[in-house]
Length: 249
Ligand code: SF4
Image: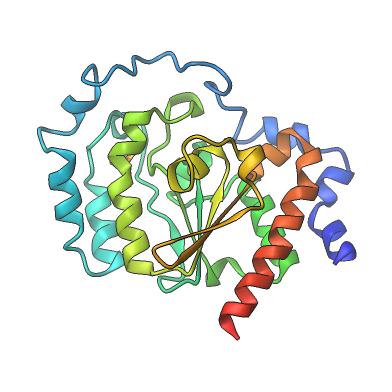
């Protein structure tokens, strides 16, 4: 496994990670580590973007969808939060519609917004390489994000935006029926596992909810910023693959 680890991360060994990172859509988040500039006061922006439709109505509406393709088409029309007014397209997610593992990241970046696919920038390429090194194919898993529209300047999604997009995430989970969900990064971890715990503390731990195993690891973009995180991510993936293989056998 050590040799495979080295194959997965030559990017870092060559010292090219920062330059590559800065040239991509996944530049450091504008809002990381500080309060976003936008007004987060409930009622200031959120409700008017919900087009007068309460969240509970949208939850009930999406609960009626019976396949991912219909849900994808519905998502393309979504205007439920302000992010849709500044992004190019809704990035629904892609992969095996009956995947055993569902990966959930943060939000699309510029390249994802351009192509309409999740994890296609530098961080996505690193994620693909980690998959390959761990013996996973992108096609056998499903990859999506906590919010499906790119935040302006790649800022962190605001709480009401996460809340607005949550019914889609829940609908995807209901339709894909994954046995394992992997939260990639702090936002997905707080949204899906524990809102009170940071990613550094929670990563590598396993939880169970509604018969689904949940775990979290660092977002690949965090590895591009901080190569010291590559080792714990690799350990997390080794455990993930063990759990996955046990479930499949
Ligand atoms: S981020 Fe989600 S809730 Fe907001 S407009 Fe896009 S698809 Fe709709």
